[in-house]
Length: 165
Image (cartoon, rainbow, N blue to C red; front, side, top):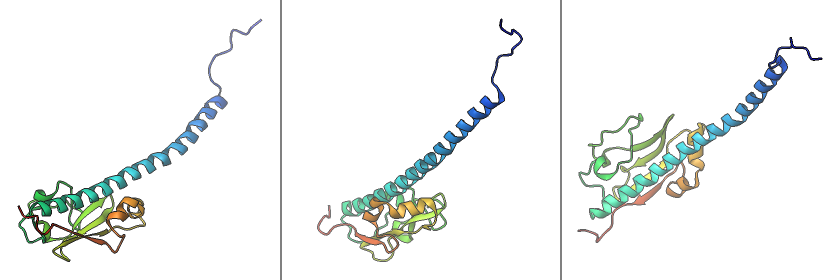
């Protein structure tokens, strides 16, 4: 004989067990998700850095320029979103040579482009705080190291002699 008064459903122990399993899965998944976001931010910063360097070299070479002594504006040279020292979007109608430009992350400056030191070269260096996650990973990135030398920077020659149109 079966007891027909028995209610069907989950016991409290079964519910707690399911909640604990979901909590363990969430604890495993959230750090992986955060690491993926950091990787994407680093990839974006490094990609923008390479693109800006390529854009500037291409522009000055195509103009036959060996120095920055031109009236080129930021929008003439690149579409990379460069910013000023306060990490606010630069006015793209300003001349490229006028000031240092930056590629910023969520927490501020990460990469500095300095066209003011030597008019024939563009210096690229790390400008962030390596204690911050994204900045720290940008500094360690092999592709970024190839275009800069960490905090000291590498100057890239621009333009070319004898390429005048």
